[in-house]
Image 1 (spheres, rainbow, N blue to C red):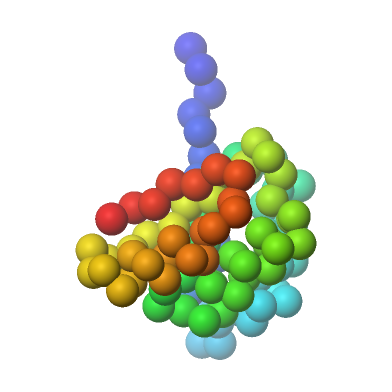
Image 2 (image 1 turned 135 degrees about the horizontal axis):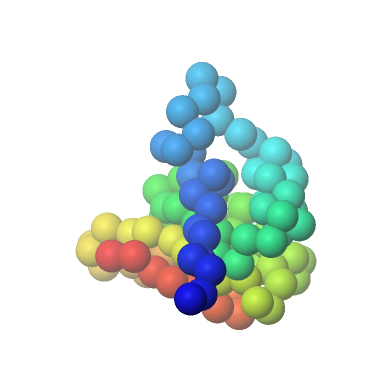
Length: 100
C-alpha cells in the first residue's frame, strides 16, 4: 500500500481566511516551509485573478526556487483571457497541474 500524496493549499488566499492575507514575502516563506516539510504538490491557486499569486509564481519560477520533484498546481476559469494569463504565470515551471 502506498502513502497518500498530500497537496498543500495553504498559499491560496481563499483558504487562509485571514483578515489580512499574506503578502508576497510571507507567501515565499510559507512556500519554502512547505518544501522543507516535504510537500510534493503545492497549489498556488488562481494566479490570473490575484496579482500576489501571479508574482509569487513568477518569483518562484524566475529564481529557480521550485525543486524539480515539486508539482505546482493552479486553478483557472475556462475563459480565454484568464487561461492565457494562467499559462503566462506558469511558463517555465518544471511540473504543473492546471485545474479548469
